[in-house]
Amino acid sequence: MSDLQTLPNIGAVLAERLRQAGIESAEALLSLGDTEAFRRLRVTLPDDACLSTRFALAGAVRGMRWHALDATLRKNLTREFKK
Image 1 (tube, helix red, strand yellow):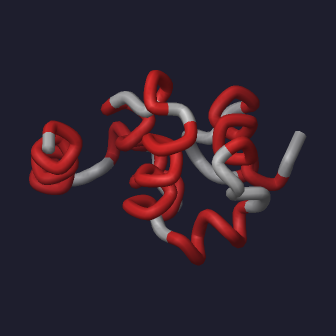
Image 2: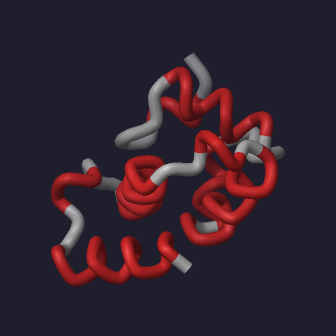
């Protein structure tokens, strides 16, 4: 298990995708933030950069399961995703 997987919402598959996008550690993800991490995933693996992944990253950097994200934040992330 990588240290990325110690963050909420980050399992083996998403951890591998993050590594493919050049994000090698939990520290790197937290330093970049969820917006930049998702941007990198969209560039590197556009078919894997879905809204669920966006929510997962937002929750991971906030230390919570994505289901617990505030409704307003989820709405804003959805709007951002559709751009």
